[in-house]
Length: 261
Image 1 (cartoon, rainbow, N blue to C red):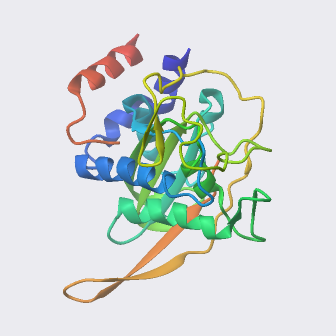
Image 2: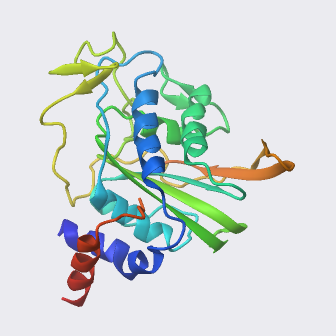
């Protein structure tokens, strides 16, 4: 069942998007490393915070949906118990900047009350540092136009997370001395366990997400200095709920065969 949903979500969009706006191997590495670095630095510190790793199946889900160029969350994720962060910007694409923008929402998050500041968004941050999340997969896609957003010639970045975070009534992690509740090893304030990854579940979570309706913020204007001139870059982030040039051809053949069958 899980494979069927993945195929429905990705489908031919993956085939059409193989050569467009792909994340490089270095960008993938940077995204994963930065996630773990930021998860290790939360304040207050986390008694239990799991390490996240890259997952190619999740990447396929993000890749297939990113190619549709829709500024909204993937409706299939509710069946896959995945969370999702979205980012879009015009100008030079910087995956590290996108992840940092998500993390910087911590300035508008109150851990004690588990709330965002009034009229602010913090769902990207809480998903990024959700302690039980262990797998991520991201994809970027260059969109001529975006459905539901008046942007042109923009790069869309989607990161999907498993298991999902932002479960209503729960904090992203339990505070305490770093790694004090790790059942096994601790590495740089992150719990590292042999049996780190739970199986995927094709079921709806009993709890609802913090933000069921994503909010679109006004564009944040950022100046990027270049050798020739200062370039104006508009960056916009949306509330919470890889493509790789060297992606395995076997994965593509499997996808094509599954679609035919």
